[in-house]
Length: 315
DNA sequence: CGCGCAACCTGTCTGC
DNA sequence: TGCAGACAGGTTGCGC
Image (cartoon, rainbow, N blue to C red; front, side, top):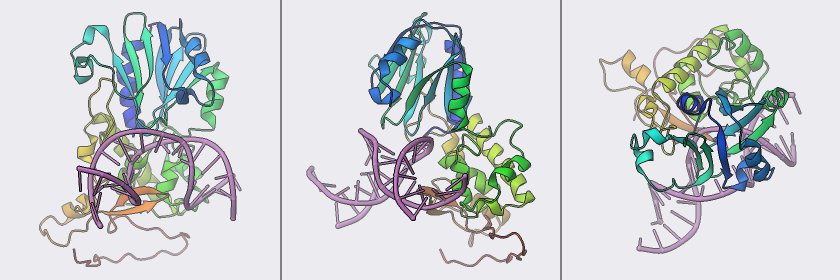
């Protein structure tokens, strides 16, 4: 579930609720959360420690602790982080419920009564306690690459990591050590914006494609952030509320619907508008418009003229 | 080293 | 109604 916009939404809500407060209790309720290490040392390492900051790298939520420690949380597919502050009871569905959320995997209590809850249906989520700046850097160095909403993401930088790659663009975008934070939703949305075919080899992009893809990535992620993330199924923000990005999808989960770009390009005529297709790439559902998302050739050597008229697939 | 795919989990939905 | 099978936002480990 949570990709960069969802994790960043949680981070922004969590930070002001927990920064400067002290952890007075830490309960790891599911031992898989800290796998392969046992949960007890993690819980003991947290208790009594003050939270200094809440940051994010890729899809990792980083809880900065006094003494150079960091609790690195990853929500994987169905994880949620919820914050309950004592003075906000009744502010949302989450607070109204007096009962514990389902699938609770960890609970952290702070010195002013604030509670931070980690829930996760599928139990893929992880919590790692890293001591010292070096341990954090080492942990992240093999897991996350370029931060897409920073100035580090340029067409040149993207070109360097894509160079020589035969993997399809969709798989390339999902590789976190290249560009970090993009998941299945935003990969589809970025490729549509860039007018690139998900099966094009990553190494086939020329400068204009790299520029378009950078722009597509940034636009898709920023819209996701502005909408508070995508709630297709499980995702809720730190206050227990749904995001609204799912209402803004151009292609993701929209199989059979008209392509919004092609439709607006010829809005006078209703018929003949290409429709979104679903294929499987790297084992993941992939949605795209076969008409406006151009399939690039492996070698950028020969330039091929694109046909002007759409192949009339009757549908 | 790059790449594709199974595995890790549990819940929900669809079709017979 | 019951049940098998497909599918779900992510990452890792293994084999080629």
